[in-house]
Length: 110
Image 1 (spheres, rainbow, N blue to C red):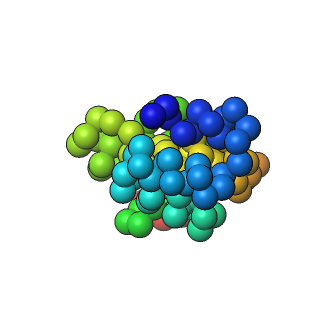
Image 2: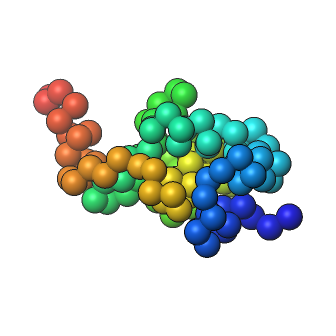
């Protein structure tokens, strides 16, 4: 079976058939990625994508994610998959500023 994300990039819709392929190909991480996209938890900032996961907010750039799962397994996590799905389908929030500005504004000055 070929990577179903490629089907999305090629223009296939995110329908039940593609969802099933994602689930079969990526197993539980694919299901988690679909949930993230369905719940609108992917945002595109000027500098990179940010995904709100079940246990935190993660920076995703290309095939890199700041989550613990990615660091421990050194392979694609649900957050990277969610960004790939969101990019292919256009299902992400576009935030027209730098992510570091959001972080800077939430950190109390010393």
